[in-house]
Amino acid sequence: MQTKYIRILISIFLLGLIFSIAAGGATNSPVPSDLAPKDSDTTEDSDSTTDDGDHTNTTDDDDHTDETTESDHTDETTEGEDSDKSDSEKDHEEEKDKLEFKVELEVDTNKVKLKTKIANGTNEEEFKAEIDFDSTPKVKVEYSSEAGSNKTESELEVKVKSLVEFEDVNGDGLLDDNDTVVQTYKLEDIGFSDLKQSSTDIGGGFTKYVINATTVDGVFTMVFTITETFTQSNGMILKPTGIKIDYIINGFDYMSNTSRLALDSKIESTYKVEHSEDSPDEENEFSTNEASIKTSGQDTAYFSWVKTAEVDGNTTDVGVVVKKASENSQELYFIYERGDLIIHDPTVGVQAATVAYAVNVDLGRIDPALSSSIAALPATPLMATFVILLASAFVIRRRR
Image (cartoon, rainbow, N blue to C red):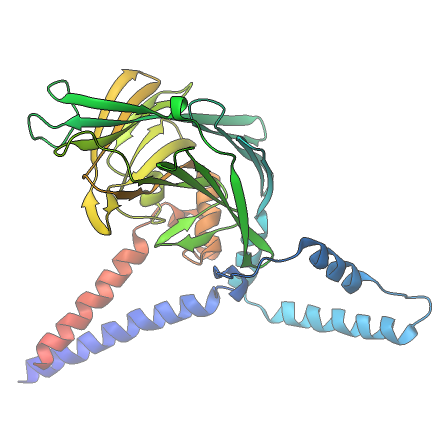
């Protein structure tokens, strides 16, 4: 009986120690409210924002002595507040300030050009993307970074070619040489209507853009989501160095009652590409249940996809066939369950090592005071949670 109470006391002590450390970390590295992603249905008027900014900065020091005195008093107060901040809070703000994105977006009737300049300390980084519907739909992303004399680059292009209706003769759920192709719906032959753009204010002066491209017969739609900052959508974290894409197949005219549907794409790069059963976003805990085709190297350009799709309102597995065309290209087939409405969510973007660390700081996952050693241990928060849950379960078990 005495041993039992000793074990309970030890467990409580360990729990208290763990939570005190966690509380200390939270105190030393709070997540400012302006970092929290916000959704809003109201589109902010950019002109009014500029006017407000001009009004705030307009002063008349020569004619209004009292206003100058008040300004001096405000500066003193700010300095006092800064002096009260912990070193960790200052480090957090400094690290956050290093990561700034300037997004330039141009949308034409059949083309989109995106340029994102990234300020990350002394590095010069740039993310570019081009979406082209002039013939076969193409999405190309490029990334470059210069840090002193070191320069890294990466790029990737995705071509969405056709929908393929086929009879799965051998019943393996995939499209292979033993199966029979019923018809091929080539997107280049069908053509697309003019691109449509909308925007949403997501708070903090940032905007989310949505661009729709639909075939002239209304069967196939690609929806592109671009954001000026990090925000959440359907359990995923969207970032300014990536473009989320929704594939929507609606009312496809099947020629057979027993066939299935495949979406044929080709991924190309000037660099070596490889198929992976996870994605760069999944590795950084920005998403879950994804696979990808990505370039090799430190700064990775990638095309990733969720391993499930929504078919007539039901979540179903997506079959994947990857055929290696060369070291620098892959032929990719998504195999969907048969249905009238199919929705699938891929993403194309880049995952730069320098941006990934700053992103984790910005999202409050990493205390900058712990430096880059913590950034190299992305599973650390999960491990801490596991230890806390394990200790809690031990105490509960003993109390029973």
